[in-house]
Amino acid sequence: MIVGKQKPIAEIKEIISPYKKVLVLGCGTCVKTCFAGGEDEVATLSSALRLSCKKEGKDIYIEELTVERQCEDEFIREAAIAISKNSAVLSLACGAGVQAIARRFGDVPVLPGVNTTFIGVLEKQGLFTEECLGCGDCKLAAFGGICPVTRCAKKLQNGPCGGSQNGICEVNPDTECAWQQIITRLGNLGQLDNLKKYNPPKDWRPSHAGGPRKLVREDHFI
Amino acid sequence: MKSESLSNLQSILDKGDFAVTSECGPPRGADPEIIRKKGELLKGYVDAVNVTDNQTAIVRMSSIAACAHLVQLGLEPVMQMVTRDRNRIALQSDILGAYSLGIKNILCLSGDHQTFGSQPDAMNVFDIDSMNLVNMVKNMKTEGKDMSGFDLKSPPKMFIGAAANPFADPFEYRIIRLAKKIDAGADFIQTQCVYNMDRFKEWMRLAREEGLTEKTHILAGVTPLKSERMAKYMASKVAGMDVPESLIKRMGDVPKEKAAEEGIRICVETIAGLREIKGVHGIHIMAIEWEEKVGPIVEAAGLSPRPQAA
Image (cartoon, rainbow over all chains, first blue to last red; front, top):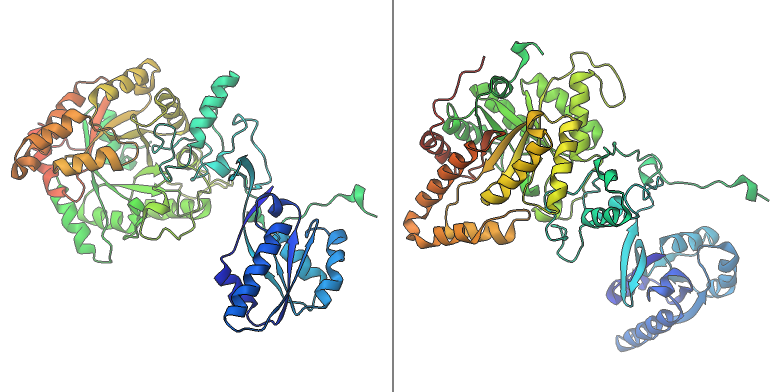
């Protein structure tokens, strides 16, 4: 899923400050799961904003709404009436959701309330970890299902570097060395020979290095 | 390769002589005198001088420029090059430029992560890794081609080095990675500083067993300790460094004013031990901001005068 984190309230207040009527728009999919922008977070944030503005004597109207997914037009449409009644939208979706709203509603300012951080998993309750950079050319088969592009701080294709000690990455003591994990896992799988193979320079064209990407599925054109 | 194009370091190693290299960190400024002064201290005591490439991710005079200053002094540099700051296009271009300036040795590294440096807010590159860099420089040399397959006019023929850390984990895999670097094109290897001789000997034994010491020249790294504090710092704060407790104690057991002397003594003893190990073809002395001690260490170790290159 896409993992995001709600922006600090001071920053949110700053970016909504030019507007008197704001729709706080949640998204019921990824950002709901990571507690950044689902229905509950919309309610909590809206109350906090109302309270804070009232204390400061600022006049603001805040409306709340959450749609199933802000990245799909079908669900965005449900927000049309609420959006038309407000002067700006504070979207608690990921960056894709914010932009999808902006694309659909050309004359309404759409503001981000969440910092989109990574594609990851819920490792355990309350802990989300980054697992995929979306490089567009998945080589997980060679690395025992552990991604060095995402999980090695130097993106080493032929790691580990000299800074791996006791299974920990030198860059951050809270990060496990991806290459140590790759070696352990390949050992368990009986595929240690993979380590002897030279992995050539990565072709970054399918990644973001080639500019914004598109997926075309003509078989689904209507 | 024609002997006239060989680097001094390569011809010494090819002859079977025991090589001595050292290190020189460029200044955090644009004054060439600083690098020249450091160079003068090393002249005559070493076969080549490594010039670091923005080590610890702190902005310094570029390795290429500092190398060029050393070439002008008549010293032979080993240009360190990291993949942290440049993509493959810039790396290849800088290698062509470096060779045109008379730089004939390169040490291919991934580089210290930028979060350790003075500008942790920087973006890194890591387009390719150090293994890929070794292979790129090798293909320039043996195939005469750049990474696109283009036939280069006057391709650079660098003597190619890579780093190895016998003390990092996982230990068994370190030999596999060394073999990969040699297959990728590493003519010589400079190791992390050796303090734990037992572990280094074990690593060398594994390297010999795999026939790797026949395929590359291993130069063992040494760094003289200045104080007990430095020993403790190296042991606890520097990733991939193995300083045995007995050495820290030995540094602490002498009076403070004698500690530097003791550190040098340890270093000379370590060199003597390293020379006994089959497959060690040289030493790499990393006297950090202590270049003036390199000469005395080389002399005390009985490695002076240096052989003349062919």
